[in-house]
Image (cartoon, rainbow, N blue to C red):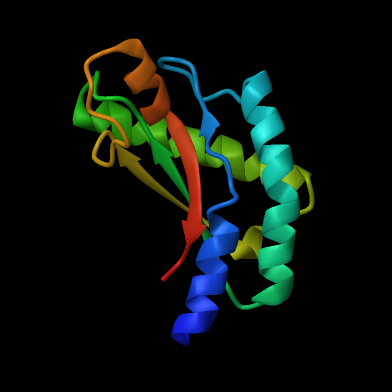
Length: 127
């Protein structure tokens, strides 16, 4: 992908909001529903502009819990986001899932506000 095309794709991806989850949960809560509904328009624009582009839904957790538990929870979170997006008409073939468990935190403070930011489904472009 040429650099200017990648830059344009990255600008569109930057508009996406993470879906946040409650501690030890993978259900889509009200604020995550709003975030994902807002994301649908951006995702449709990305897929219309780049029809062969696949998107990755990354499931993430906070640092609490074992590696194995958090990988499974991250997978459930990514799957919940995927199912929501599919219900809004985003094609399954364009979405892939990955769980990072607790391995890709966006915040490393030891408090609830930070942990909340890490409990998320994040959407990015497949390489």
